[in-house]
Length: 443
Image (cartoon, rainbow, N blue to C red):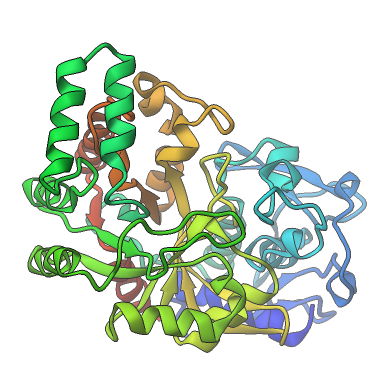
């Protein structure tokens, strides 16, 4: 790895743990003092090439079998400890960089109909590890080696009272189309009177999906605040529908004021194409408001290597796009915010990525996981278990349209169950922006 790549990974590790002075971590040196991780990746990252999965070796750590992407030819201990030094013969640094830099997306030429990286092309799918934050395991191996060698106990910056932290986010795609879709769903269920009521409400300018006040009231009931990401474009782009509302309308501006009073965060839902154009992204941010510090791209659009560069150029503090549309879990193999890496310029950006681990559409839609609402809590249990283990800081996404009565009947109740589960676990729920300063306090 280049020095920039190496410093990027070790820099993130040092942000995760409060390392005292005198701790030495080296990479592939002959003089093994302190902690040495052996370089097994060689010149792999010097060219744009995919990973040879036949060389992956599986090792057990914390009762979990995890894949090491760059491993020695001969099987050995994960940590070889001596009197004053330890050697990790498995290249956990290069393996970490592979996931965090989106290298697998960089080297993949196959995309879905929306030009996105498909889950089935991912290493997570091929190795059946979508809900395993492998980078956290890699970092924990290094942490343990340091503790053994230096006879110290490292404290994580995430070792706080809460078990894990969740950013509750809402992508606001539609506000005025609910009367049609909800009305049709009511008719299909034989609820003729309800369908008529929905149509009548529409006549008087109301819509069942213009429900931001209801979401805010729910969050206030549980003593939490969420993040609301708005589209500033309302036309079809590349056959992809965008907002059915105008961000500048008086009615919506009143809702934004209501959300501000509820201590919610207003963010950008970048249009299709803005993930490739920093000037377009800046224009969209400015159209919503100068205080915008982050958000998520529409349709989870994200292209490596361009998008990290675009986000950095646009001056945003954070992004929360990186999750698989088709599968819950850890797209970058990590349960914490991390700095995006700019592969175009071989350097880390200043933009924090908050992993998106659970989305309503992923769970419900038949072309994705197709989970019935009654089975959601059992389905997300593996993700929550890993978040508990590593005190994770991640995001979940619930569209305002899923907080409705007919087309997405029962999914309002699912959101409530998730909120109550997080709080019963001792976890906290906040806006996305609040997770970034919490993380940076340990830097």
